Structure formats: structure tokens, C-alpha cells
Amino acid sequence: SIKDCEAINDKTSRQRLAEAKPLVLRPGKYVFRVANKNVPYELGFWLRGASLTSRVTLSGVSGGGITPGGSRDYEIDLKPGEYVYSCPLNNTPDYKLVVK
Image 1 (tube, rainbow, N blue to C red):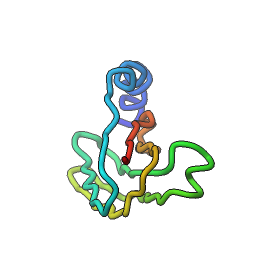
Image 2: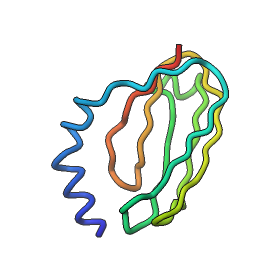
Image 3: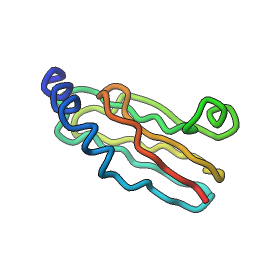
């Protein structure tokens, strides 16, 4: 249930974020395929600049409607800079992505 997912994220998100290594990519066009595995409600994806300033200067992509067992592709042309990505519908932390 959504309450179970919120409890798991509240309990484990700090540790997961502390242990996560930034995803490092070269500039260019990418497709991020996001799948909903084992979450019993719709999810989404949000990739954006890591700071308020970079949200204006860097491309971003977002969307929802990823039903249980489904997936969705998000296309983006990444420029050099720091980004974060998360699922705001599932209260996940902001994971880091660096393009250089």
C-alpha cells in the first residue's frame, strides 16, 4: 500500500542516498526507461537540474502514469552539469546524476 511504501522510504531513504554513487554520463541524447516493479500504485519520474539556477539552464523531463508492472520512456538531451532524479509520487530521495 502507499502507507507501506512511505514507511519504507522514511526508514531507508537516508541510508540509500548516502550509499548511492552519482550516475556519471557524457553529454548527449538519452532515453531513461522507468519501470514500476512491486509498487501497487502509479509512479512517475522527474529529472532536473540539481539547483534552482540549473533548473532554468539545463533540460529536464518529467511525467507520471507508470502503472504497476508498466514502464515509460523519457527522452532527454543532457548537457554538462549536475542533475537530480526521483519519483515525487513515491517520496523517493533525489539521486545525483553528473554529466561531463
